[in-house]
Image 1 (cartoon, rainbow, N blue to C red):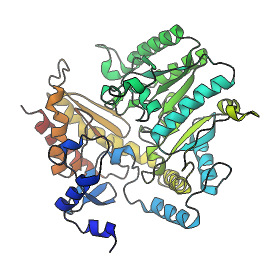
Image 2 (cartoon, one colour):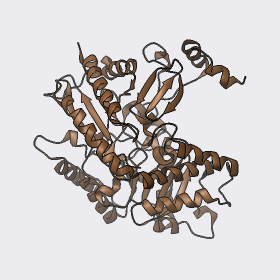
Image 3 (cartoon, rainbow, N blue to C red):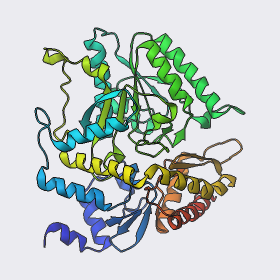
Image 4 (spheres, rainbow, N blue to C red):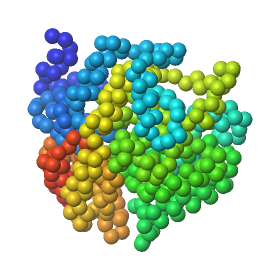
Length: 458
């Protein structure tokens, strides 16, 4: 019996202890395990469900960190990976090509906003942001504009954990410790509709914030490489949402100032917001479209950066110093490409976006009663992303003291009842796999209701 089989034979307590003896888990204060923060050993996943080693099932309401699109164990993706593994598992992508990589690039460009013409592969979302930042700076430099060394990003944004990507973020919990190591971007005020003035519409709020972006660009004219933003939803920033008018105005402003627009659709792409890409809802094409997470349907780590012919052509020269000498060992991995192709094929065969519209409408109906709770400041939704903002006082929107960890209370309560309702601070959210059904949504709504009661009690 091999080691993995022996681990599967352990009971939950023994598994947990062996794990905590040697494994360092991500985004976790390990001292909280296993008491304050449960550690749940998972044996398998099927559809919208995860199954623990003790046989208990958990509804995966967050799609396993927003990656899983069609459900765990989706056979069409698994089989595509298996077929590719028997043919070609990997080859260096510098100087070599393979069918899955070419087919995926063609398929992505066919679906992407018009004007994107080149695809560069990387390993994960943070790497995609790093690629876009470097490409933007380098392309300006290659065209003789070495003054452009700054970036603009939005307050409350998040773009990953590697140094460049983390530099573009504005969430103190992630940024503060590493501040001495980071680039210093210019921060434009987020168009977050939650921050609208009394009586101000989401669109008016977005346009007011766009005016502030315009002033920032004007004050720094000639020094900015690119504006980096998450279209429509600032996910790790608390699922804060904004009107597409901001994207349209940002595109106009970037064009006027010769600044690139980097759209981080790592979390919001592939149908999460109601369209295949969130930028579609504003009718814009970014200079860089960064994709990951749902790219492979949640099966394998992979990312892609789509860009324009104009950016690409800036690197064509006899000098290698003008080339984009950025690489990852697993760039263009054939297994990841095969998974992504199978995922895109499901969008075509199953009319996923139409199904999602129905699911999103049902989510809205089930969540509507939560808006009346005295500790809920807002229930907001964009497509298949729905968030519930918990506060101490809904009238003033005063938050609970951070030390209370109300979101953690809700998480533990939901986990005990078979739902993974992982919070962002005191914000609960639903971002389920697209295969989620009526009974599962009803369970999610019921458990969320009781989790809010548990979290908000004195």
